[in-house]
Image 1 (tube, rainbow, N blue to C red):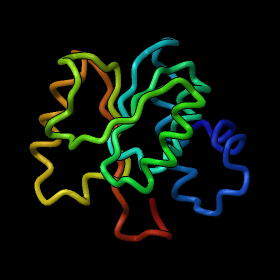
Image 2 (cartoon, rainbow, N blue to C red):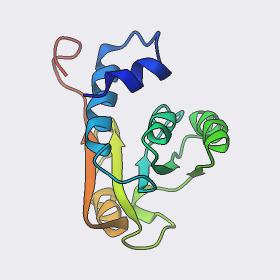
Image 3 (cartoon, rainbow, N blue to C red):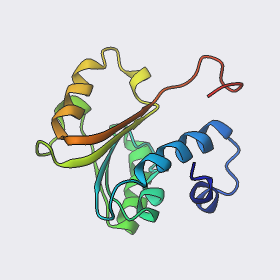
Length: 143
């Protein structure tokens, strides 16, 4: 787990589930080589963007909601990353163009996740990482 990176960027984060989720994602993404491309679908305010940068990854965020997307765009601009406003089922991206795709706390918001997952499969390189998290019914006692 990579709590060191999470704590460095978010030292006052009160949500233990966020800390654990972020550390879990980073532990898996650190296996990617520097310069690997990560697509963060449902990136919200871009919380993970600086963490991807710490690992030397190149990230593209996707967020439909304009309010959190504005915050993500500010973070992305400082890091040299891009943010798109597009649904996961219709990503304006080339096939097999990402080494990893992250969907953290997104799938539970979709009435039918199948089209979004088809979009993930389309843009993910063969052998790439797909990392998804969803809330635990026992939160905050379990993650």
